[in-house]
Amino acid sequence: MPQFLSTTDADFEAQFVALLGAKREDSPDVDAVVADIIADVRARGDAAVIELTSKFDRLDLTAGTMRFSPSEIEAECAKVGDEDRAALMLAADRIYAYHSRQMPTDEMWTDDAGATLGWRWTPVSAAGLYVPGGLASYPSSVLMNAIPAKVAGVGRLAIVVPTPDGKTNPLVILAAKIADVDEIYRIGGAQAVAALAYGTQTIPPVDKITGPGNAFVAAAKRRVFGKVGIDMIAGPSEILVIADADNDPDWIALDLLSQAEHDESAQSVLITDDAAFGRAVADAVDVRLQTLERRAIAGKSWADFGAIITVRDMDEAVVLSDRIAPEHLELCTADCEELATRVTHAGAIFIGSWTPEAIGDYIGGPNHVLPTARSARFSSGLSVMDFIKRTTLSRMTPDALAAIGPSAERLAKSESLEAHGLSVRARLDRLNQS
Image (cartoon, rainbow, N blue to C red):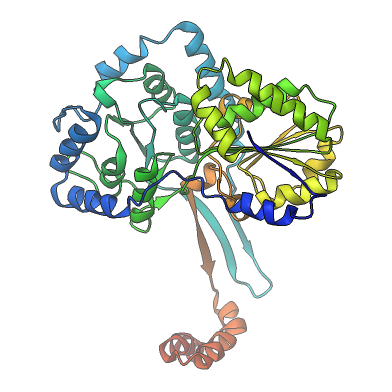
């Protein structure tokens, strides 16, 4: 049974704050374990990765079998049926088209002082993508991570995907091929993150690591940040649906369950201005949970972290939504377009009853790697921008330096940085001699 809250309740604020602060991460203190794994990989390279893969994934590898060979890739891709292949291709095309529009442009101009200024964008040289394996094996995540990197112009793209007991998802391999990934390694966990960050005898290091994973992967990404860039530390999935009574309760129930089925720690929340509709949605969830394949996972998520909040009006709904800052936000209201313009904090917004969040997970075009745990207040989902960096450009002429140099010298003196000021003064003196 989810929580039922109403903004008219005397203790609503306390209940809402408790909802926001609920600890959903089902992650024990793994940092010490991860620190030891990273140190081991740094010290022993391939040997450590092979040993840890045998221990955790029950898969015995050698340096020569860590990476999928071209023939193995072709064999796995051949297992994918025509319909699945077509769906994956359509998704890739749409993701590519969307992310191609994100590429920024270089700029150069001359200002009033005669200085030439600007910036240019260049890709990272190499990126590593973590793709969950086993039960949580998602070819869609391959496309969502790899395609923006390729659009950005990343020169080398490596994927690590755990294959517990040697079981491979052919769709994951095909997705990697479609996205033009350069290397695929059958390793996972903190040891794979360490291998990407520091390199081993077989795996060259990368400059940035992206992609979701379990608590050990998240802890490893946190620890290697600084040595390499990372996208984000992702927590359990979450969805907020704002819906009025002019909706099918079953549709909304399915939308809520679409995230609840990810993880027992996922969170699904409905905000509505009609209490009776909220109850109807709860009833529809109960019905669907009787037959849903992942009902054990979804049911626990819904019972432990689900919530239905009744508000006086949609103005209150927007305020609460921004406080939640959800990973996924569905707006199923009569004025959904206008409502969307008023939302400030959300990873991704799905506008209208015909736009279920699930369409964004696969085929919509925008990225499904999104900020969780209220981090949409200050961060964005994965994009081309995660794989490029901006370099600023400056060029002074003698006249430009004469115009602005004295102020630079003065500011250097105010900070007691003598050499800074002298480096400018030496050039100004030369100008005064000519």
